[in-house]
Length: 560
Image 1 (cartoon, rainbow, N blue to C red):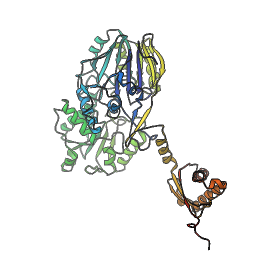
Image 2: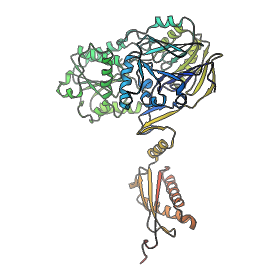
Image 3: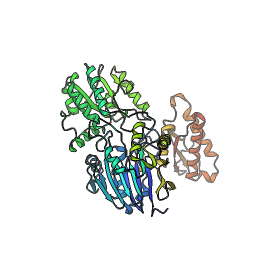
Image 4: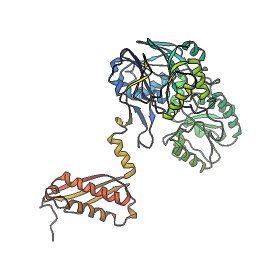
């Protein structure tokens, strides 16, 4: 595919899904990467926590990669940099707060001294080859979210990143829509824009309003401890909770590693400096119950999150008891419902009061609702709308909205689609490899590869192993030894092992004499017998391993 003499947009993550953003622009054969984030695994990847995009396409072209620009410090935009950067070896550009978060990640990977991280002041500009980028501050649920107005010889592209129009953001300035208007100047070729809340009418809501609501709610809670769980990256919410805790004579105790890291990075970047000192888990035991406000990780019910550990009684330093209150100051991310509702029930069974966004006004989204999207389109006036940061239904709805607002072209694309923006665009001119890798011990593994396929089969089917002792004439000289793990409840089948052994022996003697002398044929026959047996018994197909031990006739048991 020829990438010369044109401007193209190519997402390798974040289009057709929410999360794992990795976007590429190419101008005259040179590439710019915007964001490099992770996604979180679900039941389809048992034992896996983190997923990263397949970036092999751009890794193969790293000599033409001018740099990586990060719009903000959320995991789905910056979380994969430390894992994937060794494949790119390119300079990285980001804001001061984002650089603090990135530095921690690079340090954990042991590559902080290798990566060329360039700190770019919010609202400044950057030139990389044919790409001139002007950074425009927009509000979000994390500090220093920077949209990019990208100027090229073929026209300008506004890359929105994640954003909202919050009139009272608590942390940082309001969205700089005046600068956005000046930079757009009625001459923008395309806008690559957030689609998360395209189905939500009206406005997303203000962080300042949440602060007022939480303040009033905390004033009503006179007895017991209060625990609030939210996203660790939501520095505005952290600030809100600290302020209202002080007003109600409670001390904020941070519980969870990521909260400590985020608040430390925020303070180094000049945020949270006017708040009372946060306490640690070690201070918790010295405080009266009515003086405690726990700020915890685990707002999505993550098993390793602080809130889940506290609820199960497994946290080494922090506990809750009957009469205490837990406020979930966050939304339920689709896919987390079962885990989160189980956590709510676990707390309720202990007579702990549970408050969620369904009960009180305790959360607002960091993404634009329809009125805000309309305002952005009225300001930027792009010729082409390219929705990203959404699933297929979000992208389709976003395209319809853009067209209804007078945009000439709206294109819904998927990861791997090469969209030519100019000249003669928009046109999808091809596709490139894209996909996902799971982060596992020692490195990355393909989500659709044999390793995770085997693990999924183990989860749903269990495992069986058998040991066959066979003499040099191919005869089974002892009863096969069979071990089962998670296949069926063995106590429910009193004759189970005898029947499995009979099935293995029958299958073995159905082999020809020459086949019985070959270990591979014996192993295959026994494995098939075990799988057939359990498929008929329970509908399961266990992962099966068979071991054949050959003995000489002299070693075989002698008949008496």
